[in-house]
Image (tube, rainbow, N blue to C red):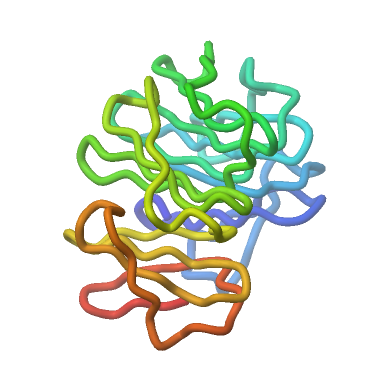
Length: 203
């Protein structure tokens, strides 16, 4: 969501835009890609795709430019200030500090990263089979948290609480940056997405 604009990433048909709360949708110029992730920073909209890396639009989707991260499966995107993080299949996390003109592979470089979330200086990466990793230095180094044997498909942060949606084991939460995790009462579902609104958590 960006202001009154809602962007939706689809399988094979790219990105759609609604300006009226979803009553109607228009296909943007990115119209033939499998879009797995979206992130917005100011006027910049980033789309992570299957096989074709990250695209950037600066005009609400009227046109898109493929960034130099152009041949990866990008499952997740997260933005902190000028830093853009991209979670990829089998190649870990990449970082761009110049709106996608250049990308650098971080030290988490050989896992599939399904989800990313940022809280202050903490970057959390949800991985296939190896749980959640944490970096406090923009990806220069990563530490595996104690949730270390799950596939983490989604992450969300609310205050000091970090929520992790897993494959088949529901939602876990941590109040201490991943030092320890507790399984919630939603404990037997594959959780592909999490969203937080005030005190409400939707999965």
